[in-house]
Amino acid sequence: MPTEPVPDEPTTIPRERAERIARAHACVRCREYTYRRVVVKPSTASLQEALGEVWHALLVCGVCGTTQELGIDADGDVVYVG
Ligand SMILES: [Zn+2]
Image 1: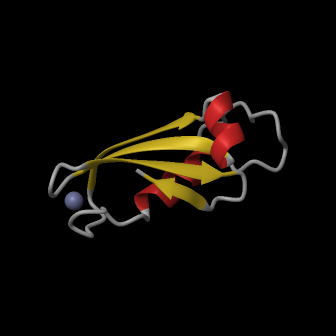
Image 2 (image 1 turned 45 degrees about the vertical axis):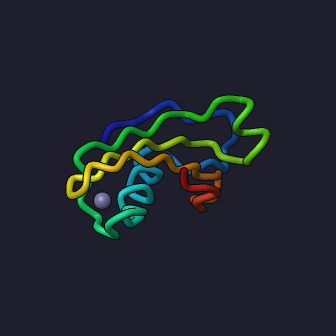
């Protein structure tokens, strides 16, 4: 598995774990887990401050095509779904 540079905080979960957490989240519309596209990016400073998220995931459902966003915090908890 590829090694990513670790974000500032040593306690932050790695990107690949954030991606697994994102994929384990059911689609908000159809409740399926089949994603056509999953992109996990480091959160912006403002979102990190406002919501506590360190990873920002963009998911495109492979069943209904809904695009949803997830915020994932340093412990791997989903802090919001949008
Ligand atoms: Zn869906």
